[in-house]
View 1 (cartoon, rainbow, N blue to C red):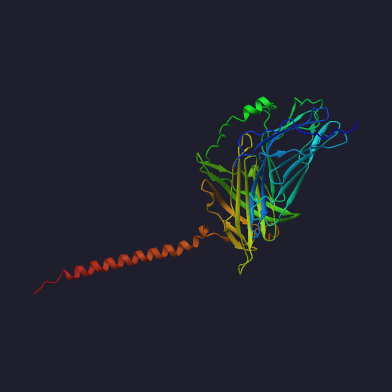
View 2: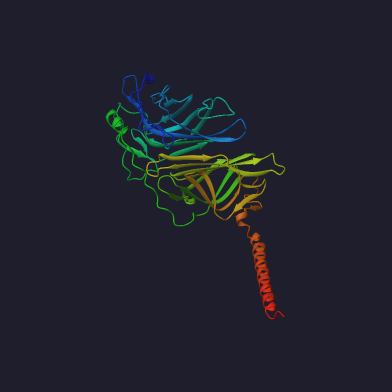
Length: 423
């Protein structure tokens, strides 16, 4: 049997809700074969966080969303001998695709390919590298039973080569049989068994959805205690290249004030190590992404490292949508001599924006030159330096004693004058 021909068009390409900074667009693609019946169906939302180098050798974080101009050139239905391909192009030279293969019982996403174009100056101002950059993620999905619809309401993210791809509200089925989308769902592990099933959209209900305002996400209760301290590390091969021990708390003052403690038990550490730059990426389940970027100050007489940038992405824990994304790339904190570590047991505050702060507790970090999987000698912050209190207390006591002596001397002289009478 000859493989199905590539479609000449797609049935639906619709966007739900507003396309703004905090919320990506939703796209729906219905690919049809030569007989004009559905062979591949997908609806999903996605967002990209990209770290790139500038001409001044600094690093910045860019946020890339789907735009209102999306095409699907290259999408292929697939067959028993040919992989299915879902491909979209958007913005100024950006593209994303997923490749599906199948056997007699299951299908799976073999790899995801994402290409971003740093010539898009609106997204990548002052980018040092010009042109398209391609990232490939392999084994992007576990096998799914044929004729089942893959559904994942919650957030899934893939991190590779300074790019974080974030997906949520995914409904997808390649190799659709007889043009009929399957009625049985295969859920991702993040979705609870009791989660509401996805309603496969039609033209009617998609149009209605575009005018419906989503309810505000339910906020978590304010934590009564300081966060639990977590231990995180990165490796290059079998060698540890970054160590961090810290308790983290987010303070969000946007709308209703909210404190969020980061739970180390559900937090995964990832990132990159380098000679002059290192990034620790913490993913707290399906809720919070925090990136810490450290750099080396090579221009100083004594080489030091310091915290340069912090990026925070807050996700709606109910449906995984992005509700807050902010970064500050102008820090100069947590500095220590290269080869040493930095320690601060007391609470510190990193102000990301006016509405977002990150509080740290029991901090101990070493992003460079880690030896034998252990922290090197720690340079402590001034908040922890209790030795400075000793001279302050002694000085205050001596000053008080001097004041008492002076007052007693003045009173004594006045009493001595009172014993004499004028002749």
